Amino acid sequence: MGLTIGVDIGGTKIAAGVVDEEGTILETSKVPTPDTPEAVIDAIADAVRQASAEYQVEAVGIGAPGYVDDKRATVLFTPNLSWRHEPLKDKVEQRIDLPVVIENDANAAAWGEYKFGVGTGHEDVVCITIGTGLGGGTIIGGRLHRGRYGVASEFGHIRMVPDGLLCGCGNQGCWEQYASGRALLRYAQQRATATPERAETLLSLGDGTTEGIQGRHISEAARRGDPVAVDSFRELARWAGAGLADLASLFDPGAFIVGGGVSDEGELVLDPIRKSYRRWLVGSRWRPHAEVLAAQLGNKAGLVGVADLARQG
Image (cartoon, rainbow, N blue to C red; front, side, top):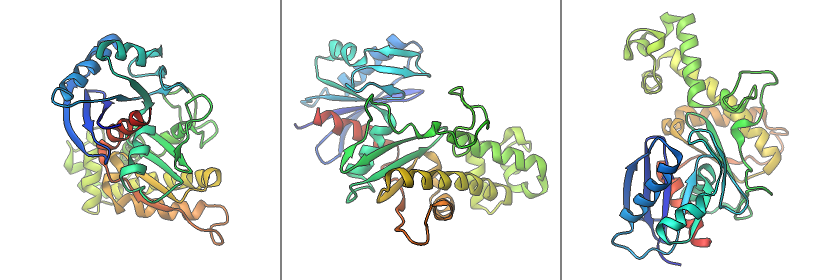
């Protein structure tokens, strides 16, 4: 199969891109994300038509932010779009007259990094995306692991702390409450409140209050050596690395790939993640250690990955 289209559904925009067999994006289009679930489906179709206007496209892959069934046809649940057992494949196919494959967006990003990014050369890979929340995907023996019902690798909702912090999913103590962009912000605000004299740079980048701290302020302050910002990243990394150690016991991958907005900080966060991973890895002194790598494709990973999955059918 030749050219395919990958679709990435974001909170503010829907992006569609024509992708060749080498993972190169040849053309893109973007449309605003509408407010209603049915309007989102129309917007997906519009983005696909715009992107494919000058190309002969053979299939479409859609990365959906939620649980996707084992047939890659139905979105079982996605909180932000209010889809519940939404037959997305059938509805989009009716609008564009092309074969459609649906995949969880984190799985799609993992596949993109494995096939065309930093995961090239590894057969067993675990990818985590640390953004506002925490997601992930798993490649075992060169195949995307989806589980019996299609909803494997929802790593963000592994319960790390019994009776811990309340998560948006309704459970308590989920991993993403301790290793995510939201967690990083909470760490920084709590530390700045407790010891404002150690957060002078961080507070100066906002409006001078802890409530005014934003994620970009933490990153900038950490690069300038602000103690509270640096400590906040280390706390996030401690939890991220501990989770990777648990995943190593499950999957024994050759590489962990860390993506999402937090990974843009490079070694500022990756080095302490590696140290925490080795600290908590069972038998760490006597067993091989998986590489912990920064994702390479950025926000293109999901679009490229799901386009390739559509090529496979």
